[in-house]
Length: 334
Image 1 (cartoon, rainbow, N blue to C red):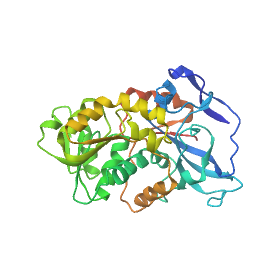
Image 2: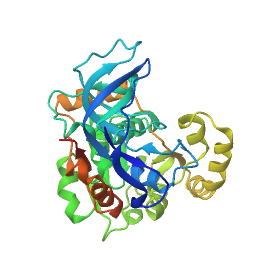
Image 3: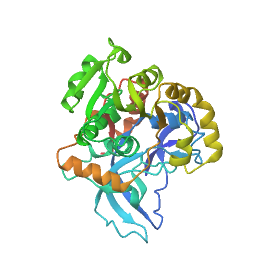
Image 4: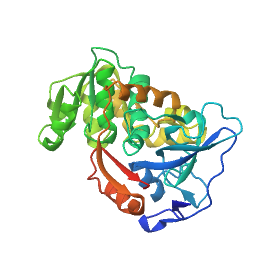
C-alpha cells in the first residue's frame, strides 16, 4: 500500500510517499481503509523532530494522526465493530499511521461517523474536536453563563472551541482578524477582538476561563484579563508537569523537564492569580461519539480550508507549515 513515511527527522525532504506492507490488526484493533485524513501542525512538528522528547517511535514511521474510512478487518477480540462500518478516529499518539491507504486503529479510539458528514469532512473532526472538548469541558469545566476567552478562534481548533463553548452555555470572546471575524461570528462567538489593531489586555473585559491556541505574547496578555483564581489551558505554549503526569503516562523525568522549561510561564500566571495548564489531548472514541452526536444535531459544524489529493500530501503539509491555513486541511485518498 502507499503511505507517507518519515525516514529521518528534518525538513520535508525527509519524508515521502512510498510503498509499505499493509498493517496487520492486533487483537483489539480494527483495520480501516482510509478514505481521507486530517492534517495538523503536530504532523510537521513530529516530522521536524520537535516532539522527540515526548514521542520517539522507531523510524521509518508512517505519519498521520486522524482519519475517516471504512472497516475492512477486525482483531480477534473486537466486538464493537464490523466490516463495512464507517468510522473516524484520532489514532494512538505513539502509533500514527493515518497517512496511508490502510491504518490500524484501537477499537476504543474510533467512533461511528456522523450520518450527515462525508468522508472528506469527517477526518477534520477528531484531533481538533477532541482537543477543544477536553480543554473546555474537562480542564476548564465551562458552565452556563461563564465568560470564556479563546485566542485564535478562526483556526482549526478554534472553530470547534467556539461552538463547543457555546454548547456548554458560555459567553464567548475570541481574537480574529477582520478577514476571520465573519467566520467566528457565524459560529456563535459573542465578541471578536481584532488582534491586528486591538490589545486584548486593554479591552477592560475579565474572563472566567481561558483557552490559548496561540501562545507567546498572546498568552501573557491572557493572564492579565482573567479573573483571580481562574485557569488558562494552552495547546500552543510550553508543557508543564501535569502534562507529563496526566497526559503522557506519569513520566517523572519528563515532569521534571517540563517543570524547568515552563517555570517562567507558571510564574507569570501565578503573579496574575491564575493557574496554567498545558493540554496534550488523548484519543477517545467515547468523546468522539459525543462530537458526532453534536454534529448530527446541527450544533457543531465542520469548517474546511482546503482539500488535497493524497499524491500532493507534501504540498498540503507545506501549506499547514506556512501558517496561512485557516480552519482544517484534509487529504483525500481517491
